[in-house]
Length: 295
Image (cartoon, rainbow, N blue to C red; front, top):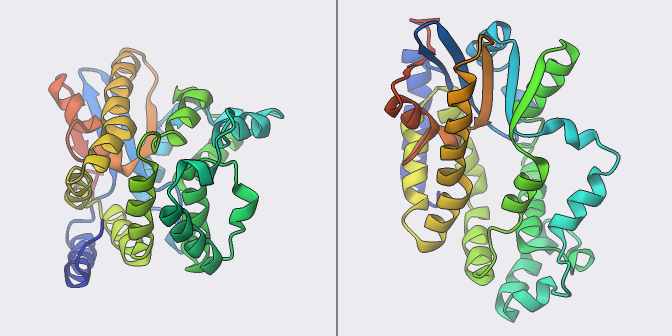
């Protein structure tokens, strides 16, 4: 996502302009014969200013009898969740942040942590993936761009409205993926992510504008940018492509049930090579983006 400033500004203007003209959303209707469901691309962190959400999200929610999330959201309220979470974000074999990173990478990480008032000394035994996540969250809070994500919003709403809740991955599967991505190339991974942290305000604004306007093409560009580097290719395969294929198998089964599901996954899963929507089209499903014309 590290792009020239002029290009970023142009993309942002185009995304906002598209919002006015087409009124598209990041929600799709998927159907085959009498069976149907909805797929919504989400932002896991969303500023309060982005609420209310585009109307198509609420329409899909109203139609759905079941909500489906990336992971088992119910487990987050489990009394044992914190200890489980800690077992995935901390090294369990004696390694430390300092031992897996070069001195140069660690000093760079420490510099950013100091600037963001994050106590890196208290995270000596934590994996780089978690430490970077904390820095990103701190930066977004500083910029007033953090808040309840679309997933959490609809999960809480679904619980209140007594909707059926389902998921693609167990909490263990999800945590294992999220906090082991950097294994084997920690220095390169930290350098890449710190570089992106410098531009996070512009990148986040651009992504939010594209998400709100249903600009799937911009997310495809982001996916292709990931694939420009070896690290990005590894991340894309682990975090997106492999999971998408697994999820589509499960969606295939859902399409055989009489229930109408509203599937909510990160927007990046709906763009780029081997994305969920294209894989569904390949299986013969009709996939239609919701907008002002067809809602």
